[in-house]
Length: 286
Image (cartoon, rainbow, N blue to C red; front, side, top):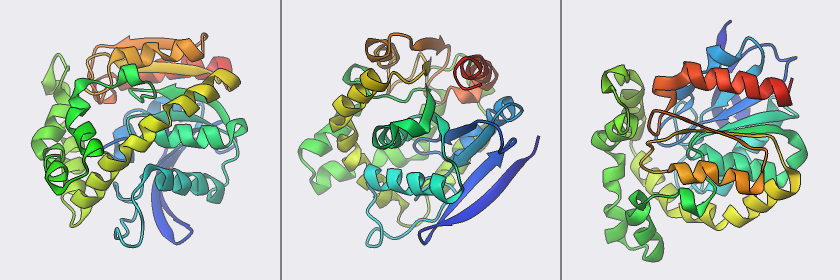
């Protein structure tokens, strides 16, 4: 199994992505979260590529994908979703299963709402779309939504520090020595690029658009009943277990599972999550 590292021009924007597996097999699109990039799937891709065609892009402003200036590209989740939608078209993906995590959830669910027939299944790993899944840790961000002042914007800069990245990777993990420093250090490197802090603060402000879309996404789930596997790091300080359980309200057949980990559950449970995905996808995708 080889992972290939590619870059493709998407309407003038260079998008980096990882690709593995036979392109003739069912495709799985992996969408990463904050503050990471497709490298977060380095342990998961080998678990899946023997049976599936796996594609994992970096979002604009993240990882190795181009970071256009804010006066050239508006960093909003709708725009990120549009880029990823066009990316799938440019590389020739027609139908695909989604794996969504954190920021990847509002991007992936936007794709599903816009074109439901393209989505064969959904795996959500701490990828929330229910109010009950949002923890109190979002209070400072919500304060910024209510009053988008410079003071409230500056109050969120702590989210972009190495200390917060370390917290995201290790909170809720029984043995932090199992967490490789490579991933979080790479995330910190990308966050430290000139101008990236303002990009991330723009996205934190626009995250309110994702919450506003929850009802629409839930209506999509009820109407189309896509196969759903919600597999959650149960000690996530941001997206709590109630958010996983809520999927069963709209998709009663949803498979809801928990692993003993935190937000970045793949860092400790890639093998278990990969096995659950293979079992789930075999039933619903082939």
